[in-house]
Length: 450
Image (cartoon, rainbow, N blue to C red; front, side, top):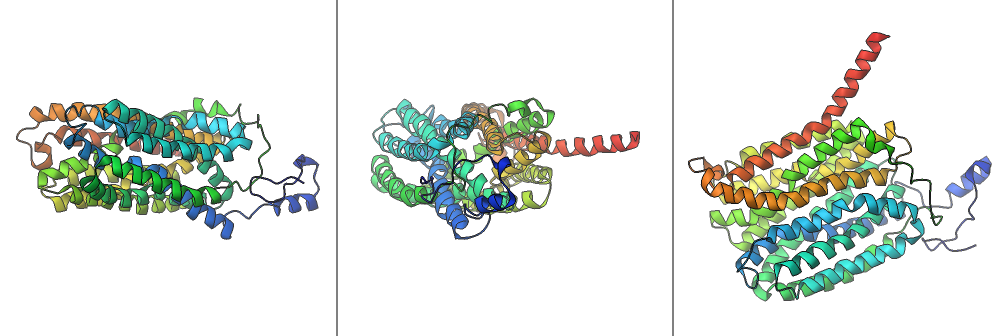
């Protein structure tokens, strides 16, 4: 018998339909139990949560770096293009998801080595960015290279997570997503302190060392629950779901939400300086926002397990939009801005936790669709918004310099048009919830015709 990816004995590959009841039961017990037990929870917290915190927390905290880069040499002389660095890393993380999920769903045997290579790539991207002295260097290292490595890590982590949790899938995905928020709590404050004291080169090298060391236990526990069988051709013909109306509507909602979602996180640190906040105060506010996303992600995962996903989509969209329109739009001091950061994080931070619910809804109509691949397409639509929101936000702020004079509070600043745009896009994210209305209406018509 040969060892499997878990290090334990590997059962011989047998066609399940030829097994009797005893053999089915024996094969089921050959793998760790899903949803419970120390193996599942160690995988989730030490492996999944920690790795997501490391890979996603850094780009989610880019607002701190943007604020530093724009006011310190060598990037302050020509700061145009700095917002695109953070949105490019997130955009690649999201946009590459469908291709990555399809590749690693087929070549499952190579997932473990790809996970290690992806982690090494993100570490090298951090190290290389420490020696950047032009914005295009940052775009290539901190943006493109980091995004590609993190995409591989993220894809394989989610595929493994889908194997380890079945009954509590929504909660597990929520905990996994909250890892990004947890990374965003620690990294902004740590980086702001270090950037001001030691500069970006020293801090990026230090972060490279920290990520390299912390990735070791995370990778150790990130193992598949079920053995892989090499090349899997069965999932290459499961993309028919992309032609369904529900998929199109849900994707549209994802894109709209993403166009507004990233703008507060990118620009809040710079905006806070208008109220006299120090760079450390602004970083603390960003950490407050990320702390709220931890709560939002876990609570949303719980809601997805209990209720139809449309409930979460509507609740999160309108809640986030209201926070932007009222809490940010009428913020008159730094304390009010902090309140907005926490409120916004509660709603916006849970959005990606809805994707497992979206995937399950699509599977109801397309049973052969792979959950991970559907999740990847949902992430890709978010990536479109992520990449587009950077350049769009720069233009909106330039237009706002002259166009919002006389408006109250935050609306009267150069960020006024940006606030209106973000709130409108977040509101349109609720389009995805109309799929439930359409479903209920169709059922009622069908019953009436009977």
